[in-house]
Image (cartoon, rainbow, N blue to C red; front, side, top):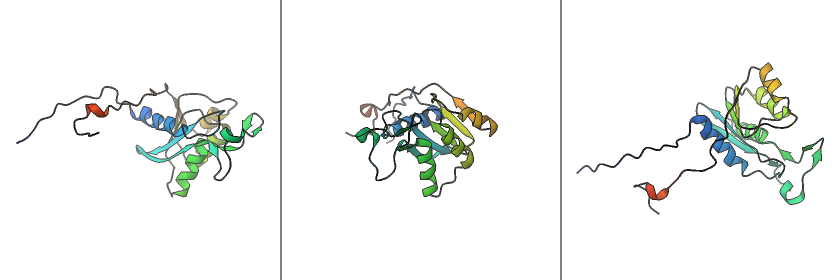
Length: 167
């Protein structure tokens, strides 16, 4: 006997940009610098290559535990989210040439130059960053910048509404 099930349409399904920015927001929750929580997701062909968040180098103490190390109004104790995402991709042998970077904040100047040099062709953000020349460098390199609205911060998952799920 074939049993039919009621089709439930998900009305709040995020588009791809919202989806990957939400993943960047989730990655930012791992950040350890209280001055900025930033997340980055590198994506190619709608597949996540790597993620990153701003935090101390492996083995070092975290800003949230011992304080920030400020030089010229920047915390230099942390590795930025974009750099961490690029390094994680490299460590795992994933080429980022042609990728899109989904970043919670406009990259700083150094991260913008690194994304460009790695071959990132598109950057999607929802907020700005102070004292950056990122947009200038992205324009010169013909990297597409899309600033969109911040995605909904709520995760829409209701275990009780899924007929195949068990608690």
